[in-house]
Length: 116
Length: 111
Image (cartoon, rainbow over all chains, first blue to last red; front, side, top):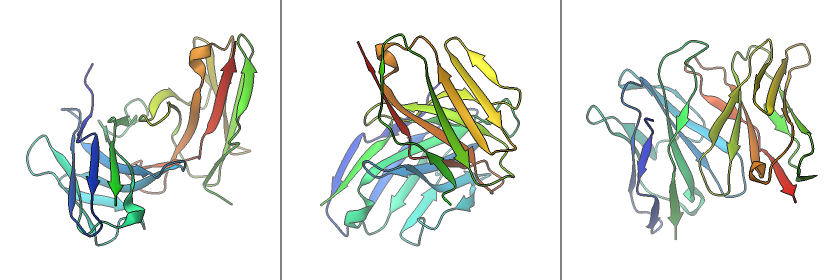
């Protein structure tokens, strides 16, 4: 069964450093998402991406965040200057097409980001 | 009012019992509703989409009540392996179906 993959599984970084989190969505999917989950809290939407551009973003997704699909397979989330409060699990998700039977989002296993 | 609300639990339930969770949502324009299951420190895994007519998958039944703006999940004949956090997700206002999440209901099945 196709699945979303994410690397690395765990990233430890110093405050102020840049990190890039990588995702490989399911190959025939067209919509891509990043969510985060701070430990013990709910999952929060960050950004959605379609047709090589951001389609929606939340208040959390400020100027320190950016996303990119540099080739046909990878989907990356960059955090330019990490803060302690960026420590969280970051989940990538992908979806095939709009429509009642195919609007399910499939999640990758997540990257645990620890900012020291 | 929070966009999506769930009772955090935990629900401590004996094996074999039936348990039900509710989830309320604030946006009456929401179109898509889901139950996900999340094990500790893992990604959410889709359990069921929730359709207007209600739907059943084995021991799991999901219902949608648009008038009262809630969805429900019923688990029959609960197993130890059902222990997890159950997340309710509703599509947001955007056109790309980004999901708005409840905080989850923790379920503990006891032998």
